[in-house]
Amino acid sequence: MTALMSTRALSRTLPTEPPVTLVRNVDLDIAAGRFHAVIGPSGCGKSSLLYLLGLLDRPTAGTVLFRGEETNTLSGDERARLRLEQFGFVFQFHFLLPEFTALENVLIPIRRLGRLNGSAMADQALAMLDGLGLAGQAGKTPDKMSGGERQRVAIARALANDPSLVLGDEPTGNLDSGNSAHVIQIFQRIAHDQGRAVVCVTHDPTVAAAADVRIHMLDGAIERIE
Image 1 (cartoon, helix red, strand yellow):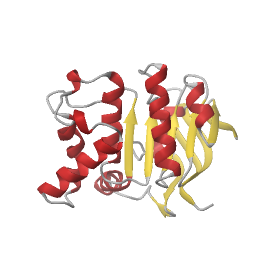
Image 2: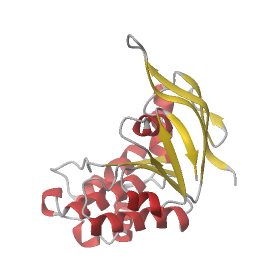
Image 3: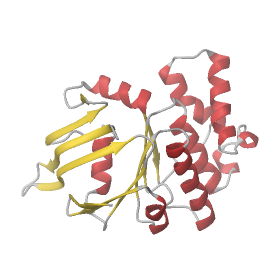
C-alpha cells in the first residue's frame, strides 16, 4: 500500500541545556484509507510526533514526505497552504469560536481556502454538518450544544476542505463513553469509506482498539507497530 505520508529518521530535539529529545529517529508510513492510533505513556512524544506530521513544527533531523514530496524545504507560507488544502485537525478541546454558529465555524477554513463562491461555500459547510448529523444545529452557537455536538462540529470543520489527512490529538479526551464511541465511528468511516488517512494520538484504549494500525511510542521512539 502506497504511503500518503512518510517519515524517515525523524527527530525533534529542543535546544535546551541539556538538550531534550521529543521524537527520536522515527520511520513511519501513513496510508490512505487507514485509521492509525498513536499510543504510549504520557510524555513519550506522541503529540510532538503529531505536530511534526501536521507540519506545525519542524524536525531537527530527518524528513517528512507528503505524497512523496519533501516538506522540510517548504516556506512557512507553503506549509500553511498545504495544511489548509490537505490536512484537517481535531483536538481534545474543540476550539470553536464561541460567538460564531456551527455553520460559521465550519465556513472558516472554506473561506480561507477561497475556492468557492458564497452560496457554494454555505452548501459545502451545511453538507459537512449534515453528514455528521448536525444539520439541525447549524444556527446554534457552541454554548447551545452538547459536548459531543461541539466535537462533531470541530470534525466537520476539519473535513471542510476535503483533506486527505486527518490528525487528532486526544479527540475523545473530554467526551463520555457514548460520544467517544460516536467520534470513533466517524473516524472509521472517514478512513474506510472516504479513503482518508486518519492519525489519532490517544490514551483511550477504546480508540486504540478501533484503529487499523497501532503505533506504540516510548521515550520519543516507536517501540512497535501492530
